[in-house]
Length: 141
Image 1 (cartoon, one colour):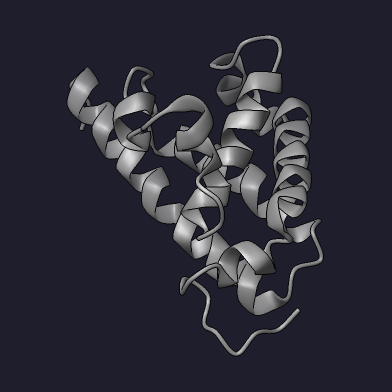
Image 2 (image 1 turned 90 degrees about the vertical axis):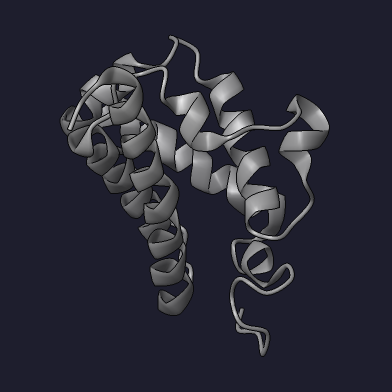
């Protein structure tokens, strides 16, 4: 679905992702890939056995982050993604594994190429901030 409104303006990105239903499909594929890909095994071990709470939280977060309803804050309150994730020692390899799972999940959604590229580029920003926050907390460089 192409729009005359650029991604990142209003709810254009949320709409391009298919709204909350589209985001839930993306998140389901993301966590399935995290379960299946050997390169994501260490990342998967940082999560509890049940991924259901994480699935809901990520879909709700992405909704607001992409300009849609602020479901995360309505349901769970405020969050700082880097500060929250700093409790784990997440390095470039962990961030790369996360981004790889997300890149593959995005590819499964049938998004237009321009939106898929935009979304992955946007996700690289918080992924890098998580690495920096974790390094600061855990004394890594």
